[in-house]
Image (cartoon, rainbow, N blue to C red; front, side, top):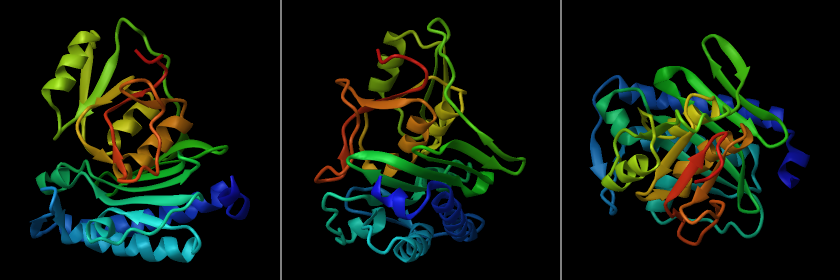
Length: 262
């Protein structure tokens, strides 16, 4: 992994955790007060908190890794899409879960994912309102950091008779409900943003089906955490979910912990 040759995983993760916490602190300044909401061309909401956090992420990533292009949600929405070529690139979502942010339930995250050869190989998911981060890098491991310290995480061995799914709090649809019923899921946990990947990565659930639209910056960081914790993410036809697609738009996918794909 060329980038890790230049920037060792542990050192890079420490730097990225600090960056995510700085960006997260910027979102909290708006979270704790009133913030104006606008809507982009795709009807998704955006706030000043998204823009403040993204400005920090872009500046710091360009400083840390000046040769690595950064694909960031709000910059792309404004038409700024750097050429990624065939090398590594960052995928950044400064505020994943804007609806959770606006409803003030705390389940929004700052996402930083690194992609090499179409695969997410590093991820940081920081939940500022929860005071918790999940981070992982290939060859280094997956970890949760909160007020009680840091611990290694991994997916659990699934019990096929007592499967637990995690589903979107704001984007649950009839197709998801039908899938859950068809596969006899015993229990469902609702969660927002990239927290769904992290719930599986730390062994609290087994599967996360998502059939509605997502973008690569929505999923790369959480995908990396889950994959490095021992899980996998595949499209509905069983292919690995890859990155660097021309539109950066994901197809439907299913994330698994310690469970063979259905």
